[in-house]
Amino acid sequence: MIAVATVLVAIPVNLLLRAWGFDHDLYLLLILSTIVAAALGGTGAATAAAIFAVLVGVFFALSRRAAASEPVDLALLLLVALGIALLDARNAYRARRRAALDKFRQSQLSEIADELNLLIDGAQGYAIYMLDPEGRVTIWNEGAERLKGWSEQEAIGQHCSIFYPADAVQAGKPEADLERAREQGKVEEEDWRLRKDGSEFLAHISITALRDGSGALRGFGKVVRDATDERAAESAHKASASHLRSILSTVPDAMIVIDEHGIILSFSAAAERLFGFSEAEIRGSNVSMLMPSPDRDRHDGYLKHYLETGERRIIGIGRVVIGARRDGSTFPMELSVGEAIGETQRVFNGFIRDLTERQETQERLDELQSKLIHVARVSAMGTMASTLAHELNQPITAVANYVEAVRDLLAEANPEDLPMIREALDDSVREALRAGQIVRRLRDFVARGEVEKTVEDLPTLIGEAAALGLIGAREKGVDTQFDLAPDASKVLLDKVQIQQVLINLLRNAVEAMAGSSERHLWITSRHEKAGVIRVTVADSGPGVSPEVAEQLFTAFVSTKSEGMGLGLSICRTIVEANGGRIWLEPRPGGGSQFHFTLIEAEPENAE
Image (tube, rainbow, N blue to C red):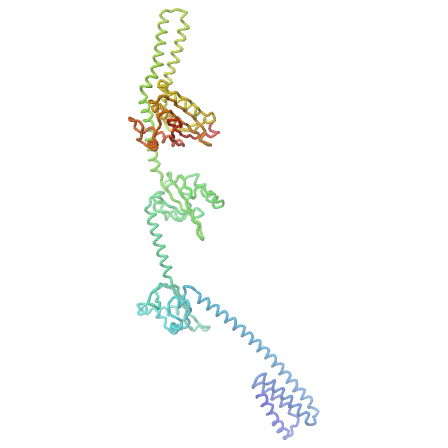
């Protein structure tokens, strides 16, 4: 309409000018009308006006005889129209491009907004909402609805004070929180908040003041998270930790926690008492300071080797080691180490038990046991007193007879009797040595010495024990047979103690066969398995009932009416102390057979 109007106005103006004598100004007016249309309606109206003006100009040029200047004016009009058309096309292109770009941006913004809304709504455990400058709800997400219970329709427009407990509202806390956020920009706190159902929960709250480009307050953003379970868990953890510390402070065993570099992280009260350091002064130090040399210098290397290879020397196993106190004194301790691997750290827990008192007690028990074993040997010789007296009487009587015969021969002073005198003296020496050997064996057997494990020849040991244990057995009709394996000869043991076991078993066997018509005794040795040798003492006596056999190695249990029941109990103690075991089996064909095992000496120690 603007294009048509401006061109139509140019026609009467041109007629009026022609009436005044201006006959060639129509094209100039048409150009002016096009410019006016552009000013009033933009490039679109200018383009339409230019086209319409060209048509009008051409019409007037054809309807009358043209002046010489009219083609030039018409060409100028055409150029103006073409320029305006190009300008309109450019503007139209720009407008379309701007519209497409705006549409794309709007689409992107819409997608981002949708994604942000999904993210905000999907935030579990978080209420995210907006307030206007007065504190009224303007935006309410699904997380807020889940956490607080109000729907979006119920919450929008409500003042934030509805989320505060009554006492907080009376104290003016809602307004004070917004004022602090307005002044500080952001406020964070933990406080109690209210749900729609009236229940309260502990909330972690963040309030942020939102401002526009000019700094004017647009409102507030609030993020609320339910911290009730979290704080309850923390309280439970603290209570559990406190309970654990209370237990660790009362248990007698010390506990030390170190990291993978050997640095002490925790030091229990028992550890403080044991080592003499307080937790405050030792925390952060290397645990090797609690060890004497050379372990102190080697500990970090052991730990590094384990971390690199996984090879365990003490972790999860436990062992007896030596600890060092603050005053430099050392003590034996039982150390058990456990490993715990967390998300960010590996720690080692060491549990320590002071063995000083136990070691002293064990030493006293060993001393008492040694005395008991010694008393048992003396007692065994006491029960054999009459037999020993008879055994010693024979060589002593023989010596006396030989000496008396020599005296008589010397009284006659006959040179022909010198060989007889020499023979009598040799026999006297032999019998005297025999008596001396019996006395020496008795002295060695009864003597109380320190327990000492040495490599011994088993056949020799058995022969010496039999020489004492079987004194008088031949006179009682006991037939003794030895079957000792040649490849089972070198053993590691305490010689006197194992001889005591053999003598006890031999004497028991001889006594057990006292009422038997046939009296056979077998002593054998064999390889039980690699590194273990078994010795057996078997007899042809009446045997032992199964009921008694089960308790035979228990103290004060005996098959003898006058026996105290300590002999076999002591035998078991001795055998186990020497690394073996002892047991009883019935002998096929009647009688009993006692077995016990010994540790075979290593080849390098057997020579």
